[in-house]
Amino acid sequence: MKPARFDYVRAQSVAEAHETLAQDAGDARILAGGQTLMPMLSMRLARPKVLIDIMHLPELRRISDNGNAIRVGAAVRQDELLSRPDLARSLPLVAAALPFVGHAQTRSRGTICGSAAHADPSAEIPLALVALRGSIELSARRKTRSITAEDFFIGMMSTARGEDELIEAVTFPKARPGQGYAFREFGRRHGDFAIVGCAAVVSDRETRLAIGGVADRPVARDFRALDGTALDDALHAFAFDLDARDDLHATARYRRELVRRMGRAVIEEARRCLA
Image 1 (tube, rainbow, N blue to C red):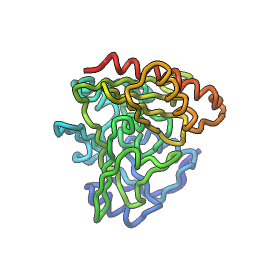
Image 2: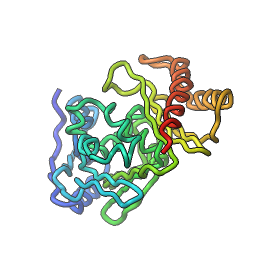
Image 3: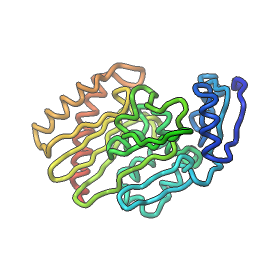
Image 4: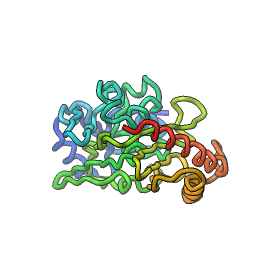
């Protein structure tokens, strides 16, 4: 199929992108990597009147380190972040998750912020943002705001972004001494969206486990440093609270069992990685 007709705007500045979004709110879409949007246009699942290309804006192509967090601009491709020499040290969870995002060919085009904008509940980047307590920077013609990832993802491919807002960047808190990180996912094939994905951040006192692919958005839960049957009970309760449902990929029962087994495995792996 061919896309429905649309106007194309190659934004020359962030201000121009804001202005176009404000004028065509609800009928405009942002084009960055295009790995998700372009197929949706071709299948006419998305029918914007205006497409705003932001990939040529240098201010959105920056990765910056403020000492406590890594800020990734809206036009930064997934492969650019994955290729960062210090990624495994500064963001070990992201370094573990990014190789599972699509394939090398799609990562060379797809953007970090684009994955966050699409908000697929099985996607790895939203899961990592929630696990790390990351945040999303939104800007519009007359306002800017930052929102936590847990508040940003509100449902199946649904976010708290306003129609006139641009995702300008996402921020990942850097690894801290005394914490361990691990990521695992289960899918039919490498590069597919996960049937269940698990990300863990642990310390001596607390365990944070985030799950993707089960609920309508990535969900995190914080536990005390539990072991043995106490951890099994906590994972069992978490698995049922996610309200898994049957679909063509897996049954609800199968997903709950994956949460229990993979959840324990990823927590144990993160504990072995305590800095």
